[in-house]
Amino acid sequence: MATDWDEHTKRRARVGFGRAEKITWAIMHLMLKLFPTAMVKALLRDLTVLDVDEVVKRMSPGDLDFIKRLILTSQSGSGFMNDIEHSVDNLAAITKPVLVMFSPNDKTVSPKNAYRVASEVATCELYEVPSDTHLIWIGKSAKDVWQKRLAFLRA
Image (cartoon, rainbow, N blue to C red; front, side, top):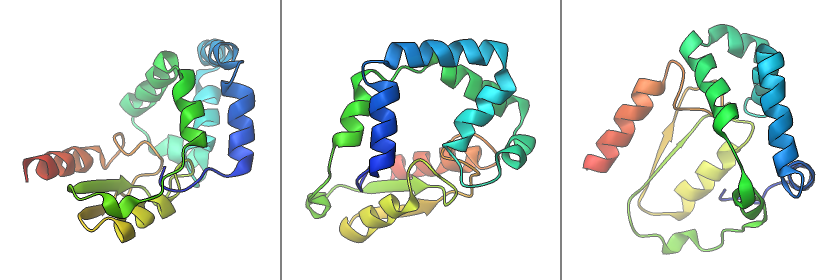
């Protein structure tokens, strides 16, 4: 992230994904098998500022399957703990082209991160994705996100 995580999120992360990480994921995998819809909604509560029930109603079966696979195959390891403690200082030193895509409805990574990068990196292209959640690569905007990435990489 381009901005610091809030202390509440850091505390939650340290408890759930520090030493207890393997237990946390085992519980999440079990809950997904027993209560798949409830588990998807629980995850989405951290990924969107919108009403979770409405977001789920708009999702395709493929989107819901993607989220279930995401939960089943995710493992944070030390990466997430490193992320929450990491601080970004000198973004202005970045000179290569940068594409920052974000959703205004993202609860996990606030849009202020995207705006910070865009304001400090001269070569930044900012792309707002009309996605319901942090997961901009699924949903009705998925094809646009894919095309935007391809166009950026080809340029």
